[in-house]
Image 1 (cartoon, rainbow, N blue to C red):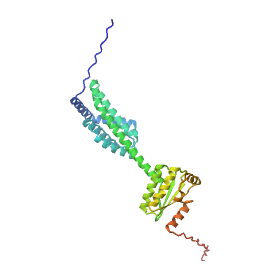
Image 2 (image 1 turned 180 degrees about the vertical axis):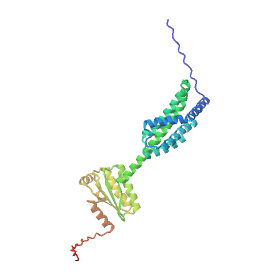
Image 3 (image 1 turned 90 degrees about the vertical axis):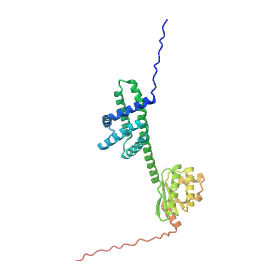
Image 4 (image 1 turned 30 degrees about the vertical axis):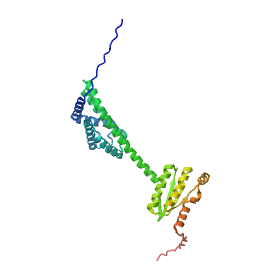
Length: 307
């Protein structure tokens, strides 16, 4: 009969809070003792990878020291407030300086590797100690990395959002031609969000400029659907409530047919063929009189040279 081998499971001792705290402090002292050596290694690796492009030597020294020490503080205290504050500042400066995602995130990944290798060298004869050390170090390194990545993404999104708002403002400019007269030239496709923003911006400007007439030119609008037509009518009605009359110009034959087909109440809209006619209509509404001045006939005089 074959004898069965009985495999005995080795009991793995769980670290106590006291032993974990002692090991954590040991790691902190190790990283502080090796501070300059590991920091220089980190700078060398980042230089080789091209992650320090655009930074001066003074900036490299300052930033590398700050990040290195921040990691140690987080490891020692278990708190990440300093990392969050620094990550927010670094992300803001990085975006403004034009640093890439690879430079910011790649630098933190490189530092994590430098720290990790130093632990392997320290505990290479003690696998159990190495495993325990990595269990303490890796969560801290990964947490800091996620904080920096999130700060960088949030800063990018904030700048993109600001740029989008600026583009939207430029895409629907409300221009003051003269006292109490505004012109709103609309160009491009109008979706529901843009139509709502257009109405809000126009109403704010009517109030701020105390406008009485608005010329809304839609020559550059390729098409209008039922929702956009409804928004245009609502804009006209809202402007009336603000005390301003809207003159709509530049309606193409296609848009005119669409408005009729959709059953839009045309009676609510004061329409004129083109922008020039719209301005003339606005002047009449404001009480301006147009006077045609005939050009003066220029007389050609021959100059005589005095002998």
